[in-house]
Length: 288
Image (cartoon, rainbow, N blue to C red; front, side, top):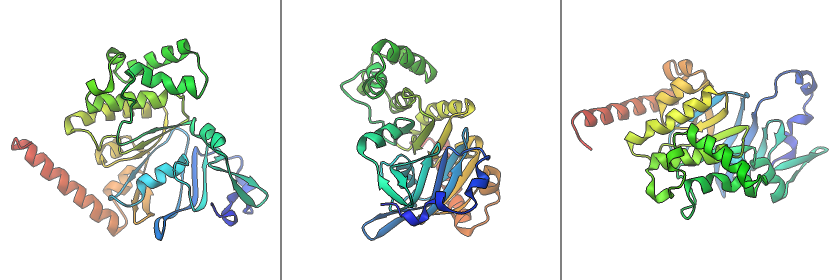
């Protein structure tokens, strides 16, 4: 359970900050362990409403784990996480924290959309049925209301012509665009993306990134775990480089990517650039 003694609400001087805009995501000293393996070692960050935060770093650095902690898919072992001012997964009573029941956690999650590496669409449902399922079942929307909203979302992601198709008949990029529409159908205040293009063939990546760029332009608050450095540079307001369960450095894309302060960041970016160069060379030679 989260440690009560790190509850920020109990810190002196907090009242003087109440006039500042409330961040959409606030993490304070977040820890996560799996047995003896400490995966997150004190993550602290804030994401403003309308901001796009891109988390980059090597595999195993804790990026996806932290993303899953934001919506309490993973329970944290220390620290606190707030989404839109609400403590995720717990309630504070005095100086102690108490874990919420599953119904309250589901209510909190309903305001957070999440898109995974794998598309996780229901194979026995059509595209339209996949998108309307949660709004009807979780939010109690009428079928007519859910269908109207779903059709608008499918148009937005370029999948309106496939509304009656089943997932098996779609490409990976098409399935991921449906997964984004499904997440948006819950009218979330925050969108989480866990390497949404990593399972796609290279030629399908751009169609998914284009949808995400559109969301950013519309002001959706987004936390994106990605290995697409060009996307992070062009779309991210803030980039945080994670390694070994900590945020090594963070800042605007121009600073982190072009003028990294830490050797670990420089080494990681050098490897990414070299890998991209090799992939480009193979493509020029016609190697598949």
